[in-house]
Length: 77
Length: 377
Image 1: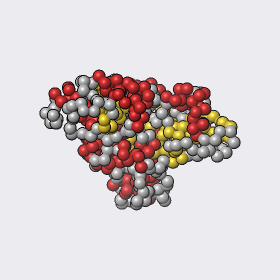
Image 2: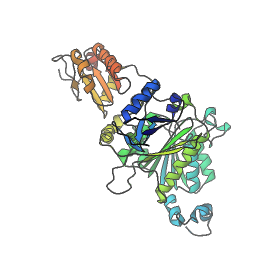
Image 3: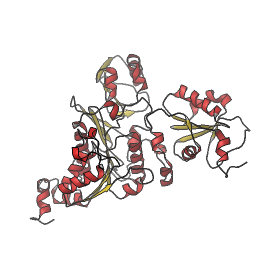
Image 4: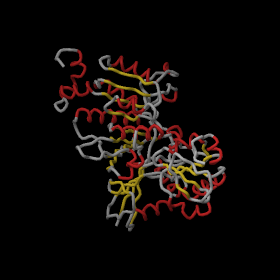
């Protein structure tokens, strides 16, 4: 099972990329924990999480080919 | 609109679009749009709205033109540095289209004036550059039921969405807090001045805001209602996510006009780390603010008991065990002299990090009652 993680805004600076893929991972909590382990600065960032374009507020099971998007708020104008 | 007059010729190229037509043009000419923030987003939005013939345009901005604005704020010239953005924008737009009404508000939108200014318009465009204005405008539009065309940028990326717009009667409209319930705290997000922005990016996003506004007014196409579009200027990646209304969001928006006017958005959205301590005046304001939890950390039986606001009791002796049950986006702690509440504030900050705003009443109840005559003995 493969999922794709899309990063936006300053999160791409933290990860050094805007797209990450993960294999054999079942839910969003595991994805976020794995990302935070890899990129500790992510834990201190604010963002909303969407699975297949729907915002989630709790741990969500993933399907094969799910896309998880992490979007931070922007204030600039 | 009669054929052959200057008005018809001015708008002819859009009127001949069959989806748009004379009916669409009439809707624009009768509409009232308020643009808050005449900066990177506001400038292009204003230019296209004025060009398209939005009949009544309000421009609210208290800022003056600076040299660092000119790479993206294309209504202004080098000669405008030091002058009011709202006035300069009005001047340039009036020359571009003298057939529409433009009002310049040379003031910052605050909880005191927001409802009056916004109340006079049909649609609001958020072109501001800070979170306190964005949450303030969102809450004001939610209270008044005004559609809000949101746009924001950072570095090479932008976001666009429409809030507070009912597609069908009976819909619960979404707002910014359904996306980001509470403002970020220190270090969570960098602002434009720190992070930088490519000049053309707000040009694209502000133009999209003008486009969405015109679509809302004329009813053509599919507007970005209930979704957030992100655009990346480097990769050209466009990504849209759906936003749905959440029950808990409504609790974060002031319930009434009076509650809204009591909100201190500057304080609640300050992106720099606050010292925990606040004075009595700020304390009183927060006591009447939606989503703020007030906690007495004194031991049971300690007097005097304050009156005039609701608070919980969570004595310092058992504070840490119960700290994770504290609700609300902002927590205000008080005790007798301000020492114990400051200690509790530090503990709370250590355990919660930046997930809540935390304050402690300086000088405690003893100082607070000295400045009050209405406290029960």
